[in-house]
Image 1 (tube, helix red, strand yellow):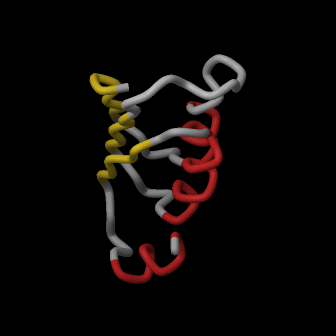
Image 2 (tube, helix red, strand yellow):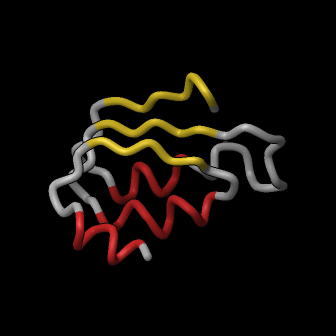
Amino acid sequence: LAHRLRQAFPLTTSLTIYCRIPSTLEILLPQWPGLRHVKLVRWHQRLQAPLGAEFIPLFEHCECLKSIDLSNF
């Protein structure tokens, strides 16, 4: 699904992601290495994962990142 999204929207620079587990970002973010703006949304309690695990894929795959919106995280 992530690959098909990239094919449909190859020039995406801004993305809002409902993030329940860090693997969501590990799958989606490599599809758009040119992302500049990311908004992470989480509406329920966090699963057991190391503190900050959601941010590792952001910094590994998004070298052009200018902003991260955590207002709904």
